[in-house]
Length: 202
Ligand code: CDP
Image (cartoon, rainbow, N blue to C red; front, side):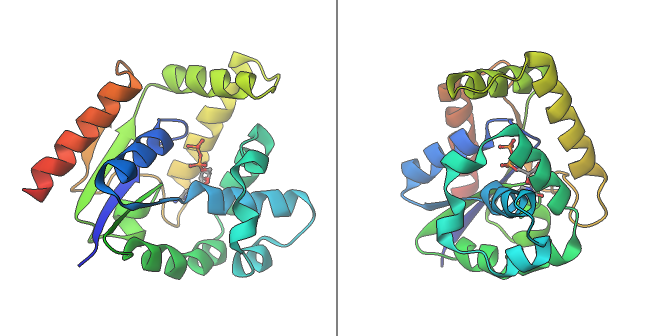
């Protein structure tokens, strides 16, 4: 049977970095589900209908280099409140989660809605200030000019929208283990996540 690891948490908490490292550690597949919503958000910015875009999504739409911009992140969290957008993506994510020998999925509702039976669930957080600082550095390195204050405002606005929506809101699953990465390096955060998963696997 495939082993599924669900990793959820607020914007820029380090889920992507941790998920990639964990997938590589265990030899599992990795799906950044945020890219699905970002791809739809990007299409809406180009004038397409969100639900049509969700139903027609293909792998070529998921090129991260085009999708990691503040505008697309904001558009992603706006399309993510639409129930028909979310349901159009559910089956794909569930099938991915059962890929052998295992899969790591990161997002907002993986442990609660997409894979409630995942073998291991993590909820990765950090203070809004630390998350904004990390995202600011990442965006600056890629040539974006937003100020730290703008990035902090974006992170907080997205967290509020993601937490307050009716369908699949951002919240930890009851059985998720919380990891606060505010004071952890990337290596420490990855080691903490692996320790939690190893304990579950034993
Ligand atoms: O990288 P970051 O944490 O900033 O965001 P992301 O994971 O790429 O997700 C972008 C947006 O997609 C989020 O703000 C959510 O609104 C939405 N999303 C969601 O609703 N459900 C998921 N499973 C993943 C992302």
